[in-house]
Each structure stands twice: as C-alpha cells, then as structure tokens.
Image (cartoon, rainbow, N blue to C red; front, side, top):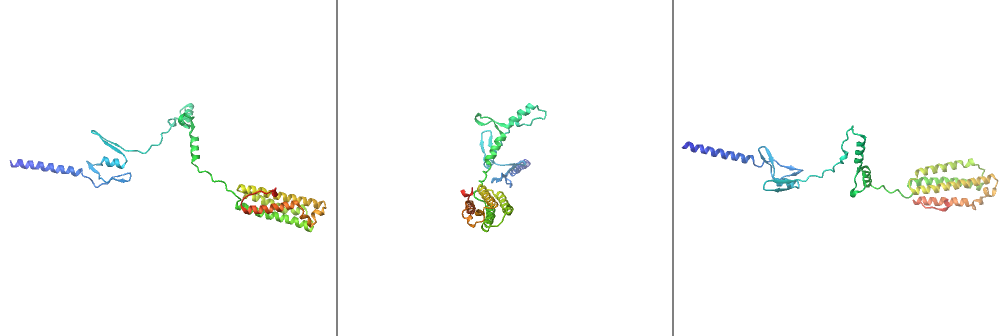
Length: 276
C-alpha cells in the first residue's frame, strides 16, 4: 500500500515538473523584435525553438488590419505600390524572329495608347515632353550695355576723336598730307570695331556697335572729302581755319561722338539721328 502511494506521488511530481518546463519554454524571452526600424514593446515568445509575436502588435507596426473569425485569423499588411507593368510587347524577342514580328513588337513598344481613345503617342516623344516640362526655363538674356563692351567702345571713340583731331589740325594749320598719312588712324579704328564686335554680348551692345560703325564710316567719308578737296587745291575748305566752323559733316560727327559717350556710360541703348 505504501509503495502504491509513493508511486502516485512520483507520477504527480513528474507531471508538475513537465508542466513547469512547458510553461518555462513558452515564457517570454528577453529578445526584442524590431520591424522596419520600430521596436515592439511586447516580447517575443519562443515555443519549440521558434519565435512568435502577437498578431495585433504586428498589424499595428505595419499599419495593417486583422480580423479574427471563428475558424481563422486574417492579417492584411499593406505593401508599397509596385511599378507599372511593362508593355507586353516589350518582351524579349528571339533572334530567330521574323522581321515582321520584330517590326510589330517595336511598334507596340514605341507607342502607348492615349486615354479616352486618343491617337497613340510615341513613348520616346512622351518621355521627351515630360523631360522638357521638368527642365527649368532658361534665364532671360542680359539687358543693357555690358561692362566689357562699354570699356572697348569708349576706347574706340577715343581713337576716333584722335583721328578727327588730326584732320582738324591739318585743315587749321594747312599741313601737307596724303591718304597714307591717315592710314594708321583708319586701321586703328577698324581694329577697335573688331574688338567691340567680340565684346558685344547683349542686344544693347549690338545696337550700340552699329552706331559705332556708322560713326567710323562718317569719319572716313569726311576724311575722303577733305583729301579730295586738298588734291583739287580747294584752299577755302582745306586750309582756312574758319572752314571747320561751317562744316556740317564735322558737326554731325562731333554730335554723334558726344551722344555715344553719354549713352554708353548710361548703360542703356538709345538712338540718335546724328549717328546715321
């Protein structure tokens, strides 16, 4: 009888130890679960060497939903939007495909049906239009007279005034001159105009350059007139100092020179009839 009681005691003791081991095996471990950078507050349960977490906790972390039915638990986890599927015709074409099949496939991949039944639109053209719409608008062209052009233009006017002064001195003092005498002044003025053309970057620069060219043309025309009168021995026009006071061509050249100086310094183009 005593042996029977001892045997029953051992059976109960074994059952208690087994139950305790099972409960210990299912207890929460000290491991922490991290989902997408978020730490789960509830612990991880390990059973039979496998880790388990609460379905509700997992749904909250992944912004999902879950439903508990009598016979199942439904867990819905949202996923990122997948890229649009490629056109079916863009599949790889075997090298042995017929030219007609390749042409049809190329046409299918190059065209995409527009919405509302519109005409097909070329995918390359659509991509180009989209890229063009995303590109920033080009900056507006600079306005006014640029500093570099103004510097060259002022130097050009100075050389023209020197040429004009030399011609005036010839007339005032009755100096003997020839066309070769003025060649250096003419060449310098044309070289200055070439540099001004390179320096012109704005619309105002180019407009001012035209007036500079006109001034140089008028100056050369005046010199040719004076030279012709000297060769014809017309002393009243080429030797008399008072001839400069009544010379309309010289007056026009002076007026244009003064206007160009003030206009270039102002930094904004304007026109004047004396420079035409």
